[in-house]
Length: 185
Ligand code: IMP
Ligand code: MG
Image 1 (cartoon, rainbow, N blue to C red):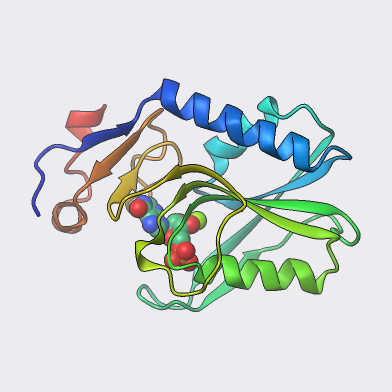
Image 2: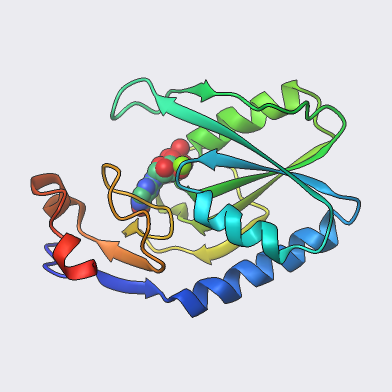
C-alpha cells in the first residue's frame, strides 16, 4: 500500500466524544479516586483531556519506556513514577495498545508495587498484532490494522501535535519522515 496523502481517522470532535465516554467509565469505576499513570510521550494529549473530563479525585504521574532495540519487544523503564502506588487504584493511560508487550511489562511493574488495582485506558486498541492476551479496560477506538499519527502518536518524533488522528503509510515515512509535514500543517 502506498498512500500519498494521510487519511483522517478521527476528528477533534470524534476524539472529544471518545475521551468523554472513557472519562465517564473511569469516574464510575474509580469513584474513590484514581492515579492516572501516563506512559510518555504518546499518551500526553489523551491524559491532558482525560484528566479534565473525569469528575473524581485524580493524581497524575508519568513513566517512560524504551525498547532495547528498534524491533525488539523487550522494554525497560527509562523514567520511573514519583508517587507510591501501593494500595491505590491505578489506571495506566496509553496512546495505543498494539502487541501488548509494553502493557504486560507495565502491569507487572505496578502489581509488584502492590497497587490495589491496575486498569488500562487506551486511546486506540489495535488487536490485529496482539502477542500478549491483554485487553485494555477503557478504549477510545477499536483500531484497524493501520499506522496512526497525531493526538500524541508520532513517527520519529513528528506529528504528535496534530489535534486529530490520521492514518499514514509507514513505508512512505520510512523513506521520508517529513513526507506529511506540508500536507498536515
Ligand atoms: P506495544 O503494544 O508494546 O506493541 O507497543 C505500543 C507502543 O508502540 C505504543 O505505545 C506506541 O508508542 C507505539 N506504536 C504502536 N503503534 C503505533 C502507531 O500506529 N503509531 C504510532 N506509534 C505506535
Ligand atoms: Mg507508547
